[in-house]
Each structure stands twice: as C-alpha cells, then as structure tokens.
Length: 592
Image (cartoon, rainbow, N blue to C red; front, side, top):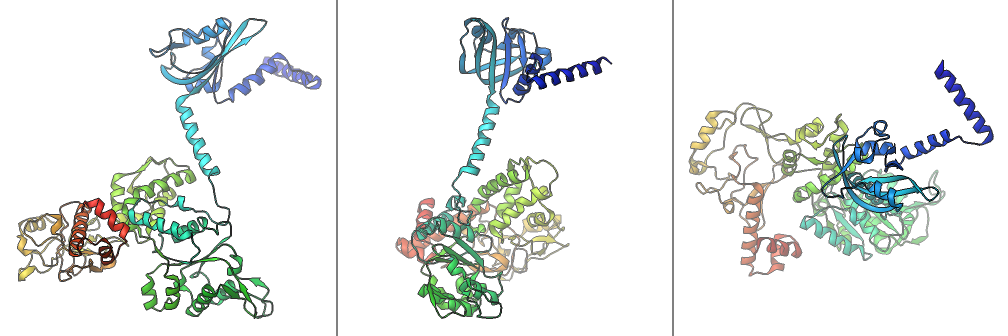
C-alpha cells in the first residue's frame, strides 16, 4: 500500500510539473543522474568535505567499485596514491584552492578492488557564492582510450580513405605482396597504366587479374571514366556481338537502338576477361576495333569513333591458347606489345602469412569474430600446399573456418577449417598404414599414403632395392640398412653416397600433376618417372628444410649460368627466362 501511495504521489507530481512546465529538484536530479550515467568518461563528484556524493556507471566499471557503497566516504578512504604520484588528494587541492586541474596523467590504487589505474584526469571546482561547494573529476582509462583510438582509426580508414567512384573497388594499394616477382609485376602495371596502350594480362584462375585491371584503370588518365568488366566465358557467343557493338532498331526482330560496351566505356576502360573463351570469329572483329578505334552497330552502316582503353585477360598460357585454337595469333601479336604476367601463389609462398593476416582482419569484421592469428602448424601446411586456386582458394579456406565454427576462436587451427578443405592439408600417411602412394588432394605435391604395402622401384646399376612397407618397423630397418649404391638412378636424393649437401640434389623436381621438367640448361637424363613413392622413384625426402635446399639449388644454377655467359646479366636473364630486375635481386640475395 505504501508503494502504491508513493507511486500515485509521484504521478501527481509529474502531472503537476508537466502541466506547469516546472521540474522539481528531485526530477532534475534524476535527469542529471541519467545523463551522467551515459557518459563514457568516469565521473566522480565530492562535496565540500571531500566526501563522495556521486559515482557514475563508467566509474563503477573502470574502478571496479559499487557506487552505493562508496557514497559519503572520503576520497582518502576510497583511493590511495602510488609511488609515482603525489601523496595527497588532488580533490582536496582543487577544493581548497578553487582552481581547476587541467588534463594530466594520474596513477592511483582503488582500495575496494585493489586495481592500479593509469588514467588521464581532469578536475574542476563547482563554485557557489564565492565558495567551492563541490569538485568533480572526468577520468579516461588509458587502455580504454587506446582501444577507442584503434577503433576510430579503423573506422576512419574504412570510411575516409579515397575510394574510387567509377564502378571499381580496387587500387594498387589494395594489392598485397612482398615477393620480388610480384612486386615487379605491380611496378610494371603502374608503368603500363601511365600510357594508353592496350594490355594483355595473363594469370591463372584466382591470381587477381581483375584486381590488377581495376588498379590500372584507377592509375591511368581514364580513371574518371567508367570501368566495365565482361567475363567472356559467362556470356553466350550469340549475345556477345550485340553486347559489344550495340544494335539499331530493326536490325533483327525485337532489336532496339542500344549502345554497345565499347560506346558505354567511352573515356574509360573495357576489361575483357577470359578472351580465350570468346568465339574466334568475334576475336577478328575485336582486333579490327582495337586497330581502327571505330565500331559499327549491328544493322548500321555508320562507323562510330571510340575512345576507351581495352584490357584483356587470359587464364591460360597465351601460346598454348594459340596452339589449341582458342586465341587468334594476330590478336595475340596486336596485344603482345604489353603483357603482364601475374605470378601464381605457389611461386610466392612467402606472401601467404601476409595474405592470411589480411583475410583474418576482414573476416573478423564481417563475422564478428576475434581471431588473432593462424596456428604455426596450419601455416606450415599452407606453405607446403600448392594452391591450384591461388589467392582465391586461400581466401575461401580461411573464410570456411568462420562459416562452420560455432565458437569464438582466438587461434585458427586445422580442425576449424571446413572438412572439405581440411582434407587438402592432411599429413602424408594419415589415410593408411603403408606404402602404396595415391595422389593427394588437388594441388598437393605430397602423395597421401594409403593401403597396406608398397614397393620401391628398381635400383641403380641393376641393384634391386628392398621392398618398402611404409607403416612397419621392417620398412624402417630396411631403409636404414640399404646402402647408398642401391638408390634408384631417378631418386630425388643425390646419388652420392651419404651426401646431404643441398648442392648435390638433382636438377629435376616434381611439378603440378606429375609433370617433371628439367630446369633451363640442365640435363634430363635423370628425370624421375613419377611421384615420390611410385615405381621408379625412392620415397625418401631431403634431410634438410626444403627452402634451404631450393635456395641452394637456385644459387648453383644462377652461378653456373653467369659463369658460362661471362657475367652477362642480360643474357643470363634471357636464358633463365626471368626479368633482368629479378636476376639482379637474386644476385644480390645470394651474394654472387
């Protein structure tokens, strides 16, 4: 009954106040308290006796105290200074002097929670009739400030960075990579962007051809014009011609006056992706447009001048496309004055950690997760994998962990990846107990052992190698006891007895899908007959880290080539089929 009476009295008080637009002191106190409790800074108010009369919610959180229990206690009862701060209460100083304390660093201990706080604090007096009646502090916790600043910087970067408004999303600043060949590709693309020549971009699926195309557009004089991207493989050949050249009304049933893509891209860029999927007859018409800079709509007799840049892209080797009849030779020669090659991810694996960090930051924001890093074991598997789908595949693998995980992760591990992708990174031998080697997942350079037994190929000089059962003690014993002379001729291990020198490794290494090729200028007599573990090849791996072996082997090839050509860097670069800039970098890297 008492509560009901008080509630009704409160309602009548509000009614009276509302009708006369007058607020009682109690109502004003409620308003002030509500406002102060929403302030992010901690607010502590003391009275003329230096006793606490108000602590807001932010102060409760930062200091770990109960506001109700702290009321009417002196500042000295609640807080004490540290050895780094003065031994007297700053509230008392402001109370006695009536002078505000500007923003300063303060460190103090909260007695109730035993917290040591590092804060930025401001302190102000409340003066009434020439007398200080209260003092209030505005407190910012340094760790909270740091987090807020990071969030603000992230928001600024997200919203305020210069973003193209011409139908594109990417610029050269969007491209990540530190590998020398990849950096060189970016540098070449920037040089190409400055002129108006047409460009042929060659790169495997998932390497970022459109990212390069958009970046070239945004770095060129055409950046204020439209960027139009067309995937030639996704559009039927019967529609491509009308899309490219446009139509006039009556040219065929249902045709209307419509501008083609060349006209729509006026003063901009037209990007033709996968032109090797375009009909050969249409490629001839494209060649004419590139050469004459004019276009004729279907059903029209009038030639229209165009002013747009044309970028073309291939996901296969251009010369192979020509041989297979997918690309006109004359179109290739028209575009070959400027060809940009984007290296596949397997040739720039040093960039994988950088790309993973970028994807984690992006997906943390999109999925509301807080993953900090990738487990070192999983990263090692990433570095061993061949990535046939390149950067796009890496992105999908990382994102799969966010899609299937139901828990808040801190470190991304193999078990967090979706089962489909997880199988790609299984350790060799996980599927069985011994020797019969079966191909691993797509892109894997390491076969997955399965079954129960297997055999090694015949040994060199007619010496037969002992059968190997990969999952048994007998197999290990036979491998340890086998003399070096019984190594097969086509083994990936040096035939030198007991040699572990990386310089002694053979000149052939397995490429994708079992294709073994000798490097330029090297003999092919010892070309292996198949994957490690298959007949004709020993399953042993080099006893030193792969990167060290590959670096040592590359150094030996470079040194031999330079010596043979008398130190002529340009000639060596041509023979090794790399750019002169890349060769100069490797010479400096290896101290040749």
